[in-house]
Image (cartoon, rainbow, N blue to C red):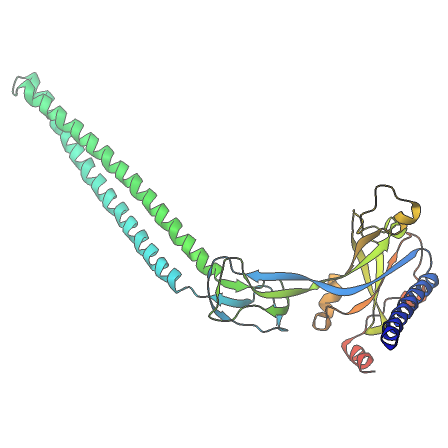
Length: 337
């Protein structure tokens, strides 16, 4: 009998807590004007995964978890020893191809000179044959020499074109390797705070594996869920307010940046009005980037709180929702209290 009382007691406590939570939510809803909706959530920030583009070994990681970083700051480097060797080889191939161009151009000059000489010889032979000073066979030989020189010049020009293509191919390979080396230096695409350091020097990673994750502290929002009636009146751009549990005396101005098109819960095929009222839509409340820039060092994700959304165009916020963003000293004092 005593064993049965313990589960029953626990069940009673759970029901009491749930009932108390529902009562508090109901009371909170009743104290709000009809044109203001509310929902609870947590502060979130856009997460950026800084990953390797190619497989390789981590050479060094230059940041730790919690560090503030600037856009473009070097976060880590991959080992590029093999790439550096390939780069040296590619440079040698470019130099060799460029030497081929130099030789092809010199050959063209030589072949042009030979063709010019052959043409003069042919002209002289044509003059001599008019006076029967040479045989017709010699004229034919000079003509043959001229034709051979023309063909040799055309071949030399073709070799120059081929050499130029070789240089372009070698240069492209050089640039490709250089791009790989550049991509081996992992930089922060945005400024923010390092959330996780996922790899250490010496680890071998596959292409696309993350090394660190960075939270963009200027892209911060809270996700809440609103019922059908309120979600239908919430539009992107509507004013909003956020009040954090950690600092209930301060009101953060925000705005609606996203309203889901689909309900979070899929209804049955036949639904009553009460069933439709149970549908919840995801709404994203975003804090202005300018405000976050001012308090960048103080932005913390994961903090729970309440978001309030203005549903009417020509209504004023109650006085208690007047924006009140503290400075660092005031916030520190509030948190200590």
